[in-house]
Length: 433
Image (cartoon, rainbow, N blue to C red; front, side, top):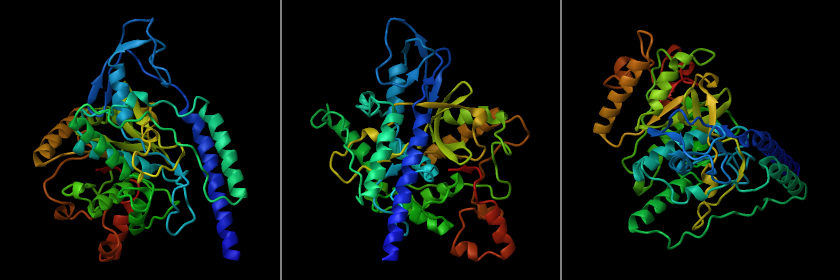
């Protein structure tokens, strides 16, 4: 009886923290983002130019983008469609309980897992759909509520708290769906693309069976000493993603592998305590490459998914908004909460130096070309004698570098001194994914 009372207290505490974090982050997400019409915008290797054309035209309703308070033409619609088509994974609440805990939400602690999911999702989109793909319904996505998000959150907070007090197991929220899509596809290729679009999102669902869902990632994280509710750094998440893909049993995923490369002798960061602005050109160069699938980075203890830039500001998607659980096992589950209509910008100087870079290569030839392109970026952007990292044939063990991925049995086999050395360099450092 006492245990049951403790469980109820834990559940109530979880709901309260989730609702509080939801309200806390809602204030941030509603702000407008300003883009310059005089500078190009780069988004995962694609360049967009915003040009002023007709001051009497209006910017699309429901958008949170503002271009210097002018109405612009050029590539605006193309940019919006491209950005919204990227898969957005955020905090969720009221999903099935995570094994070994009372948690039914990742609000307040799962942001790096979410940005890692976004990076992997973009890699899968490139693999199955290609970089030119955009979602046909992207421009129909608007804010789910005409009220301010803060007002919406206060109502949600109150409803969640009342449900907890009354002993209800689940807070029911109405699903907002886009218009019916059945039968609207113009050809088989478009239908195939939409099938893969849905399939990729379903792999990231918040249920124990989803291949790359939160439940599975937490299970893989246990081997690194992590548990639900812990803070996950970008390096740890990179290795968790590698393990998740390695153990995924799905015919469509055969032959797909994640390689995590890390120089364990001298951990590489974009600066010391703060990001060195000398590395700005390197980051911009990486995000300009067609092979790039994004960067897991952000501010201290607050992870963002960086996907592009304009001038000296990075463009990102923010996982810090707590949305309701969506059952992706349902046929035609709603897609709009997995796509973000509001790009955000952050000055590069505010970026935390610890980050993970992601690249996608379809085959060996792609990897060789990508290595050449990345090396050029490193060479051009490096103001010092030594670049941030280099490509070397072989594996870390060939050069007597203990790899940060070593954990569990492999780590136990190392001498005590070497074990401590590996642990020291395997926490939150820069990782090339």
